Length: 392
Image (cartoon, rainbow, N blue to C red; front, side, top):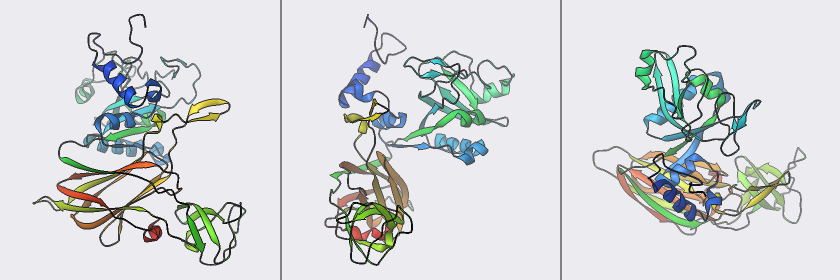
């Protein structure tokens, strides 16, 4: 429009690779609308491969921010790519950013993605360096470029590589960072030492029917009551308390998982057989279960009369069971990606179980990243849920 790019652009106006890459990425995801918003770790994983998640800030971290600094430092040492966002809190005095975000009096932009570039401990200080991708708009508190408290000594400048430039980069003490951050998203990428194998499948969509193994009387209003032999339509089966209804009735309630035996229901099972390299004790395996990106789908929901893009995911579960029957990885959640890492000595009969516990999952990919060894990933047919019921 008017000779200017609408969206992404390079610092050098003669470079066009950024808008071209942006357009290609938007085409891959249907259109520009489908890539409006989202999580930074998803974007990094989409561009670089790998997996992502979030380091949540707990109450323990807020009481002792040093613990959160340790988490960030370890992730940075591993080479993981990190980003963060900041909470609006009391937004009094906030102004509007480029896309309508709240620009807070601290200089931070609420609901905006920042890169986490460095995590440095020096002279008794624990600092985190962030960058605003707008290349402008920086933190104005302690350790900012204003240096109001004279905190930027020559020793600290040397230790951090500090430069006083209006480039969107700024430093925060870990206490201020934990107080204002909404958490840190990370993306773990896999370089050339890693090998990759993938299976593409879809979840089985079959009703879950169980049989009551004993009489049970619900003690609360939201609990289910039944008698031995009743058929139970199981809606969710996670943990020790499941939910469902007696077949032929409408009341939904919870009940102890050990009171119902699930009838036949197929579960996806894959056998991982690995061979470690000579000279190593263990090979590393990262197991990833991934659903299609919700942003690609034109699903919307209404909240207080306003239409919002529905980016929710079905509940899925991932289990890795060793040759001796021990549980090595157990993950569950209504998320796009579940993953876990394990060191294995190679060998046969490592089994991966995949299921959509609420029965509404669709396509998925199961991927294994391997280091210091090679492996095969083959589907095992005709596996029933009874095999893993005790692990759920």
